[in-house]
Length: 214
Image 1 (tube, rainbow, N blue to C red):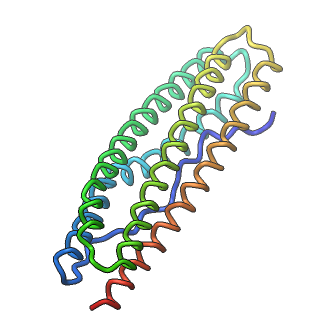
Image 2: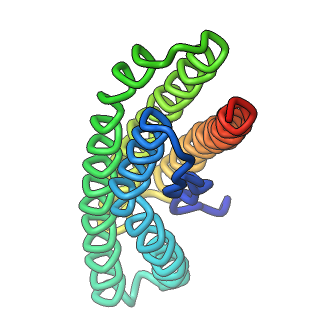
Image 3: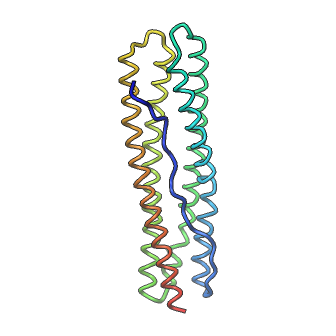
């Protein structure tokens, strides 16, 4: 049978730390970015736990697949473990989304920072930074939506695994659907990671511009 991949939800970290650079407007920017970083702590915590659950869940699924029809009770126990793990992953996904949403709300002060900036080149850089932040959060929303679709398919797979009437062809078809959706999730993660990379580059460029204006 084609190998199933439970999930791949590891992503690049946002590199935003507090950095005081002098003028009042610069301090506002540092405070805002520090707030964003702080609000994303829940996201980072969830990422680590998700990775651990996915690894264990993959192992449990592989063990269940090796069991025979005569081991039905053991299979059912494995399926319950799988469903419990998946439920915990969805809880972590909710935690992660709440963290990202809170971080996104922290961007509200950006408009004031941009408005108060007198230098047009810096104003443009700050606008680019805000756009990069928003693009990253849009990319995360895609990851989250596709990941939920993946878990829906996995639940159906686990139900089929527990049903003694399930045919091998049915199981294979569902495995293929899960693997296909997992590829979609991975593609969305790659896009999110690229958005994070671009954001960090934009952030460094903004600070370089601010340093030049001192």
